[in-house]
Length: 368
Ligand code: UD1
Image (tube, rainbow, N blue to C red; front, side, top):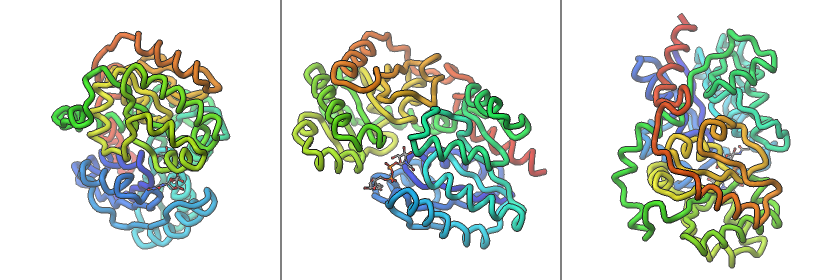
């Protein structure tokens, strides 16, 4: 079986790493394509090195642009890759623009090349169509042949949309495959000493969603709330390039300077920081999942989450919406009072470190 596996942006790299490894372990041919949606060394190359992801066979170099330009560039450059490699499967992961763009190219070539499309992390729904990721997810699921869901709830979402059962396989969460493999390494790092923070006496934050960082009032409110948190404990904040650019443009640089801002961190570094944090405040999907397995209280800075399992069976909570200084700070205080429950790989079904193995087993079963 030959599978083209697509990665484009930072959260994709953690998801393709275990899938490529499981393909290799099963003696199957996995061809990695990097669209280049993320390109800074700290947003891309760093993950290849530390997660031992093989160099991509194809790098499309699309870079940053408007949604239409970025999606269009991925499509134009991905088409010749499929014509050349003629895979049995195109595997796309997550919900970034590259995910949808490559799935679209693949479905147009489906008959001609006899390929099929698999979507890893299918069935997540926020119900908020203003999020580019929601559009990417729903459309990718609609055109994929095989939908690998990370949770029972995601499976239920697909059933509710009328997607037939034989197109769906509940396999669990590939992000937790990476977490379980990397946690021992993360625990050996001395990130805390390097930053001068003590276990459980600091907060970690990340923020990059357009709904939070493209609007000066919302970004200003979150920054003020974080400055208030910083009066109680250091706030460590690896800054996404988009957030840093916007904060400076909006004249909010003074608030940023009161926090422990850092350049984007590598996977094991952020994992080490999260696992010893008192509280994590974030708008990232991945961090909501990782804190659930780590048993660390998390405040999600969003109106809703497409990962409700992290709230129902985990440690996550939504900050009151719309985000205000008082609301975010109150959510931080509530989270701080939540007892820490420690790391567990059986807190949520399928979040056990073996999802990629199940994905590859299913692909092989269907292909033979
Ligand atoms: C993208 C994904 C989002 C994901 C996030 C993780 C879409 C629609 N969004 O958002 O779902 O959670 O990645 O980070 O696909 N930039 C750099 N260096 C880089 C990459 C980007 O400086 O290596 C800056 C550029 O100014 C760029 C901006 O970040 O315009 C936004 O990048 P883009 O890939 O469009 O979206 P993200 O906000 O990163």
